[in-house]
Length: 311
Image (tube, rainbow, N blue to C red; front, side, top):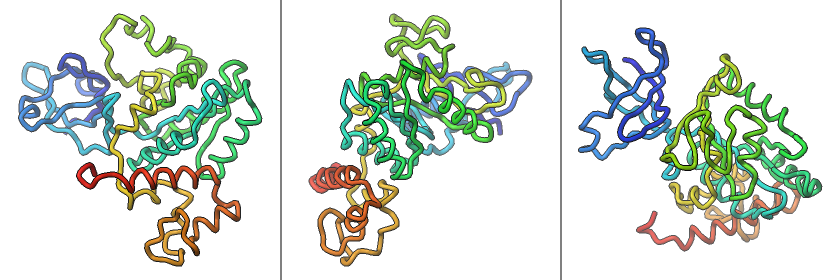
C-alpha cells in the first residue's frame, strides 16, 4: 500500500507527499473518493493517507489513517509540536490563557515548546517566565527578533529535532506576540508578512487562504524531516475551541502535577484547596510554580461549571 501525507487541499484537489518515490513521483495530486462525502469524512492538511494508482496514471485516496488529533481552525491533522509564543510585553501575557492552551495541547498529545518573545523589551520578566516553564518541565527559549537572541539556539533545536523524526509543527500565540517576525528570523526564505505568505510560494493578501505544510527539508536542509504549517500561527482564541476536555482529565494536562496522583489525603482531592493535598504541599515547597497552580484552579472552576451535555 502506498502511503503519504496531505500537504494542502484547494477546491477538492489535494497534494500528497508520498513516503517513498513511486514511478519517479514524490508529490501527487488527487481527489478524495466519493464515499468520503457519504461518510462525512473530510481530508485535512496533515492527514496520513493510503493511496492507490489508477490505470490512467492518476491516484485516488483509498483511506485516511487514524488521526492523532485534528484542529478546527486552521484545519490541520496530526499536529506533533506547537511553538507557543509568549510576549514579554506589548501585549502583556496572561498565565491563565497560556496554561489553558498548554493543557489543551497536552490533552491532545501535542508537545508544547515555549518561545518567550520580545525579550529586548523586558528581559527580567523574560527570565522569570523562562524559570516558570522550565521548572514545569518544558523546553523553553528566550528570544528577540530585534536583537536575534535565541534565534540560533532555536534553529539548532529544530534541526536536531528533525534529523530522525518527522514532526508536524505550528506556531501559535496571541495577536502581536511576534510569531511572524520570529519565523522570518528562523526561515528567511518564507518571507512572512503580517500573516500572509509572499509571492515566493504563491500566497498573498488577495489569494484564497488554505492551510499548507511546508517540508522542513526545504527550510533546514535535505537531511531534515517533518513539516511546518505555513501560517505564522493561530490565536489562542482559535485554539480554545479545539476539543476541550472533562474535569477528571485536568490534572493529567499539568505534567508536573502527575506525580502527586494517589498521594493526597483524600481520594477525590480536587487539588485546589484541600488539607493534605500533595499538589498544594509541593506548591508551598516551591516544587510547583504558583502561577501554574493558579491556572489549574481557574481551569478547574471552568470545567466544574461545564454542562454535561457539552462534554
